[in-house]
Image 1 (cartoon, rainbow, N blue to C red):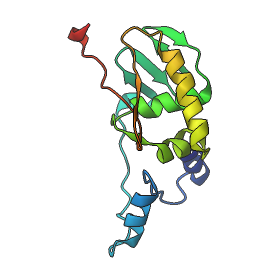
Image 2: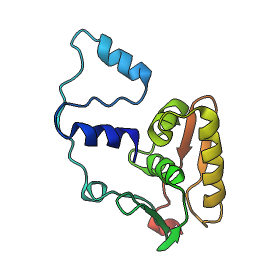
Image 3: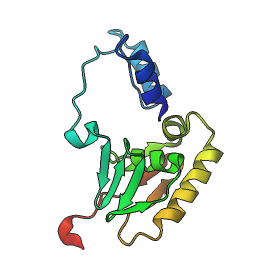
Length: 152
């Protein structure tokens, strides 16, 4: 369970939650003259609401705590699974080192993140046409968009 999920479950609707991607965004929100924007409820697509995140034929079932590739279960650790979920989840974007450390590793340092990414890359290497974790030097990590069905 990610830090965000733990906080949300502990608050259980008792208080609004403001989610920021990093400290810079938080500082901008807090220092703006109007203050933070009002919190509006987020409506998730049905798959996300059920805890499913997809990248082509790769499916992460957050509720079931498993990852499948073409229907076969991939043996990933909870850290690897969370890291992959963040990288493939919408929107596909470059995730900063800091953001991944907080979201996937509960605040661990970048050395732990690099180790987790190395293990994840090793596990993904054997998936023909599967996701590849790319380093964006000085920024973080990203994945390419999944192949379209007619690209096989």
